[in-house]
Each structure stands twice: as C-alpha cells, then as structure tokens.
Image (cartoon, rainbow, N blue to C red; front, side, top):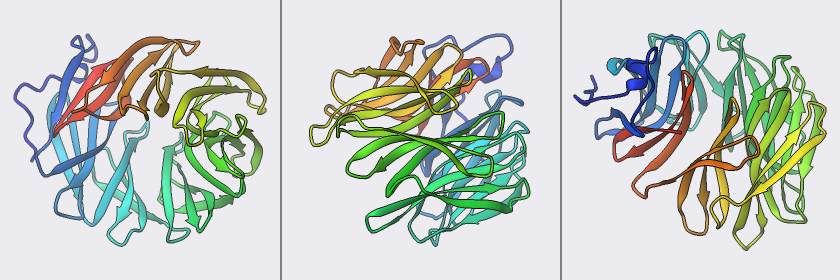
Length: 351
C-alpha cells in the first residue's frame, strides 16, 4: 500500500460539500520514489481521485484511488506503460498506453479498480494515440495518427461498452496531419483539431458525423506561417479552437483562438501574446465564463498557468516554477485547479 503524507490536506475532496480549497497551493499526494506520475482524473460523482503512472525499473504501471484524503486501493498493470487516465459518468476508469511490445491498448476498470476489458489498437507499426473520450453510452472514441515516410494519416476508432471495436476509419484531411483533440456534441457529432501540412503547417478543425463521415474541414493559414491547433471546446453551440501561430524559423509564436459555428463558419478570431515571447499553448479548457490554459514560452522556457475572461484577456497568470512539472488542469466540483509535480509530490493550485 502507498503511504499518504500525515498532513495530507486535499481539502476540496475532504470537505467538498461545505468548503473550497482556501490555500493557494495544497499537497495532493506523495508518491513513493519508484513511482513516476503520468496523469490524474477526478470522479465528480463519488469524489474519487485516481492517479496513474509507471513504476521505475519495470514495464508495469499503477493506478491509485483515494477519497477524502484517504488511500483506498491500488492496482498494478503488468507489462503496460500508461499515458492517460479518464473516468465516465458511471465512475468507471479508463487508461490508455502501450504494452511491452509497443501495442497500444485501452483498459477499462470498474470504480473499484477491477479490470473489465482490454482492447488493442493497431493500424500500423507507427501508431500514436493523441486523445480519447468516453461518451454518454460508455463508448470510447480514440483518435491518433500513423506516420509513414513523409505522410501522416489520422484515424478514429469507436469501442463499445464491452470493449469491442465496432467502427474505425482513416480520415482524409490532408497529405499530412496530426489530430490532437476530439470532442463530441449532444447530437453525436465529433469535432477534431490539430495540425496539417501541405506546403506549410496549418491549423485544421473538422466536423465528423456519428458515422465518422467528414462534414466540413477548415484550415487556418496565416500567410505561410507555422500554425497548429492544440485545444478545442464547445461553448453554447459554438466551437472554440486554441492553437499557435508563428513564423517558421523565428520561433516567435502567438496564441490564437478561432470561433466556429456548427456549420463551419468562422465567427471570431483572437490573437494574443501572453508571455511576451513565443507562446505555445499546451492545454486549453473552458468552464462557465472563463478559459483556462497552460503554455510555454519557447524563447525563455518559462511556463505559465492562466485564467482568461470571455475576450481571452488575462484574469490570473501564474508562472510555473523551474522545479514544478505541469501536469493537468482539472475540475473538482465547481472549482478549477492546476495540478503540478515537485519531485514525487503532487500539488494543486487554485485557478
């Protein structure tokens, strides 16, 4: 069993009903030295927290479950290197990663961390999985790309609640593309964003039907600059894509935010320079009237977590320390937190 810090003060879980985290920075969990933290997920239904990562000196991974500041249980996954973890509205847990022979896999667990099923994903020997979601029907939707010489093809896969692959498709977006984010609307349509390349890199945003047919694609090309889309949110029926745009070879990038209607029409465009250097958005989320992101200034190497208003102006900007490893922006009940790591201690910071 993993030992919790005696002074573990993840207050938002322990007292989530009556109070928020009052301190700006709180210790969330301390992992043993042989544990390499990768990702975190919070179950809004049962207030369970799940931490996932790898075990040093082995090909194994771990998932730790805690609640109200108390360790509950742990599962070790043999011959599997986990990369991401999420949970659904029924409190089931899903991890994605690769086996010892580099086979990409998705594994589903019950809320008690009992294994339900394991599914392999294989299009080629050069597959990279970039994002996955679980919808209201407990279907897992996976996107990624396969590289071959100078080409890169995107793929999308649907896995049913029993772990069976029921549909899959190679997407014809451009000669070269890499999708980074997928979301689903209430009508069962899917939206993707990423970077594509013909003569230069562009941001692409596309809409797919429930059967994975391409309904529309839009490319943002800023006069032969290098552009790419890294984040996507659906807000009041409109789509907001977040990415970067800069001059190739100059390493000067701005953050860009592009609004779309569901029909693919551009409704807004905003360009911002948050760091004063070269912005590269790493994570982008929307909650209520605010946007949240983490970014790195490629010129200085400094990283920041931010809270933005409706117009993408800065409400709060926090520089991430050199000894801090940014991990994720998570929502716990009604509050947004930035999760980061110092050595083997996991912290949260209120945004």
